[in-house]
Amino acid sequence: MGTGTVRERRLRVLVISMMYPNPAQPVHAVFVHRRISHVAQLCDVRVLSPIPYFPFAWHLKRYAHRRRIPSAAKIDGVAVSYPRFLSVPKFLKPLDGILMFLAVWWHARKLRQSFDPDVIDTQLAYPDGYAGLLLARLLGKPMTVTLRGHDINVFPGHPIRRRQIVRALRGASRVMSVADALRRAAVELGCPEERTETIPNAVDGRLFYPEDRQAARDRLGLPADRQIVISVGHLVERKGHHLVLEAMRRIKQRDGTVFYYVIVGAPGEEGNTLPALRQQVADCGLSNDVLFAGAVLNEELGDWYSAADASCLASAKEGWANVLLESLACGTPVVATNVWGTPEVIREGEHGALVERTAESIAGGLVAALSRAWDRGALTRYARSFNWSDVARRVVENYESALRAAERNGGRVGEGADRRVAPPAGLE
Image 1 (tube, rainbow, N blue to C red):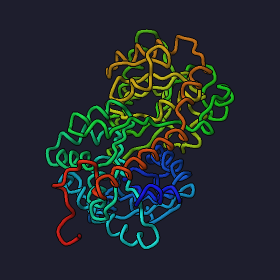
Image 2: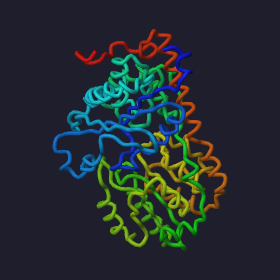
Image 3: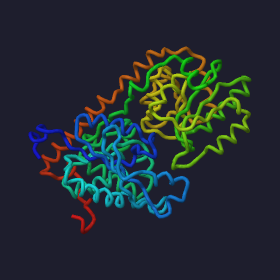
Image 4: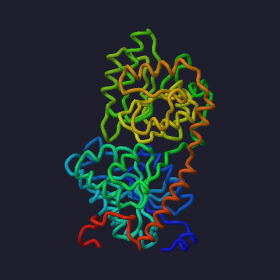
């Protein structure tokens, strides 16, 4: 397809992303949907969001919600299909890329009758990226990858997955990353640097903006006379809620008083730390100081941020955590662990505090943040400098670059792509 033809109509983009909201998990990976929904204003988009499946999965509480995910849905006008693919936890994870490919190939084959994509866009290097590469080779389409965190900083530690990730990176025409730390990690794995670009996530200013703190507290039934810290994230170990609770215990032991801590989030497929956190609250004598608010829709989070004096993210790993910008957009400073892409979002002293992932360091950061008067307007202006319209424009520029690269290569997928990768036999 020539570039002249591309300009005569909107690009057609097939997005492959395990991380996507669905009717059973409306707050799951909302940041991916925000980006894609803005891209859909510039391109024709279809989303395939593969759902892992294995026999008897519905009988396990952690995975029972998957049964409620429909085969297809429309989210803010974006058409999304949810094909199932076989994925056995722990034991067969290195096969996820190939098994996902078989599922998306079957759906893409049927979809192609009415929607023949120009570009295949994948939202993780693995398994999405490897599955997307196989599909791109089969269909003769260029492919792009977006790096989001664990796909480039954790999965390469597994040898089989590492090889598939490297092939996806080398086979992609363009590689985008939400943080420059992730982009550099991809280059270290062998991704050609000239094909990479860092495109951070953004924040929706229509949902996240400063509100009167007391009015927000009144609406939520939060105490009016206490300093409040909020954490937003799944109740899993890597989010570090237990470290914040330990930091609270130390502060209360030293000072006699402590802030009120609100945890917004629910258990995730990674696990469920709620029982352990409740026990920790009781053991630390913090029963009157902690609220487990449960899951909150993205559209309702603004009140919670605005009600707080500070937010805290004690994660072990984050690519580009959207909760940071959401908090700042509401004029609320952030205390966050200095991991992965977080120092690219938070400037020490300007937007909050960067701390080590220890209870003592978190305690020091929180005390410092709560004892200072912050310019809420400055925090909001900084957060709003990251907007989804700019993100979408830059993403589409990468699609167009991928198309031009494919044209220069006579239709081959990926400029200088690793030609060792081919679709499984019998599916050409």
